[in-house]
Image (cartoon, rainbow, N blue to C red; front, top):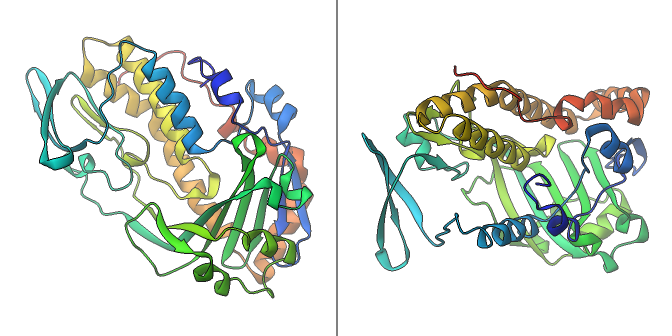
Length: 349
């Protein structure tokens, strides 16, 4: 984002967490603190930021509006595409039944977990329900206790549930995400729900009182069921490719779904710029570059979900291991994730 010239636009809205605090969901006792802030920036050459998606989208939109080479159409739903000798023709529907057709050299589908383009490329596997749901809400920082207003990411681990919260919007708002076992599996990214739907499921016997006080503040929540999909050996066909969750949706236990989509965009742009006369070859190269990394993130995110929700002896062993590692070593454990760079050279697979 900084290389694209968005650093100053984002800095005003982002929060640079100084550390990640991992705590016991039931007792409230700290398990480990992982340094971030200046430590992460020195280690990885860029700041570690938390930002609300709306603020990120607004910054990207402003950059698009300032670029005369970019044309943005909103309110359109890509329904189908046809590949022919002169590229790709995309059919889209708009409000009031409007039909729009566009010819292009390359189609990059960023249409998420429930992608319509993915099955049209021959990948017809259905999303797999993870038997968990996430609840999310925003609360003004002024309503939180001082410890929760600090620039710190809090991760609370418990049996069959975990909770994460961190400040966004320059520290003015706290984002809360509660993830629990659930049979509710609606195909919705943001189903509105009430606080009274959530609180009865959060027993004071299982959740530290200071955290329960924070969760009780927002009256409006959004809920979404967690799904993933199997890893693919490639997600391109000729001049058409998938990106982000359309290509490799992943569970949120590494908090990398959006980050992987951004990395994809960097690499696909790099490949197309390097091979402007052969879109199919450029997209094959993009998949080859991204495949191993996205597979690894998918796999480890799923594994983290099991580790986060352990109870009993398993939870005790997990906590003891994290304490023994210590925060600095825990950060080094994720160097492979946070120290990513776009490849210097590309090869066609």
